[in-house]
Image (cartoon, rainbow, N blue to C red):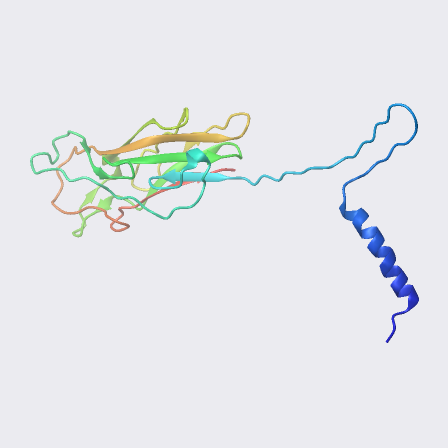
Length: 210
């Protein structure tokens, strides 16, 4: 069946109009003397909000790589029999930096950030004896950025919130080296306390941006 002439004419008209719809503005000036032709382009950039938290192994945020990494590090302490409960703080092993130290960082672009840490309660051994999280201390020392990221004080349960105040730009780049020590101020029964997500051995750090 043949197409009506009016339909073919309409298609031809639309084909002539379409290029004008997708090209940027054009202008033409004619005449003698100095001519000035102007064309305008409107540009829009939509930036999403970003909140990046790293504690331990993670992406290389200092070069702008903000990606997820599921690796979780284990920090271990093993006092000798002579050291148990003598009140001398002990360094441990593990952590992505070794020596019971972790890389910690917050990168965001939406204003102030609140940081805290939560445990399931005191660390337990297989027999139910416990070591409170107040025995685990975290010291923050300078990282890559000038802004030091403080470490939450670990508790049996939720820690107090730490407020990271954003500058006028709303962009936060804060990091640190967090080094964990065992205060070792009490004698407790022999056993393995905590562990890899067992017997309250896991601490969950949470960064929140309004």
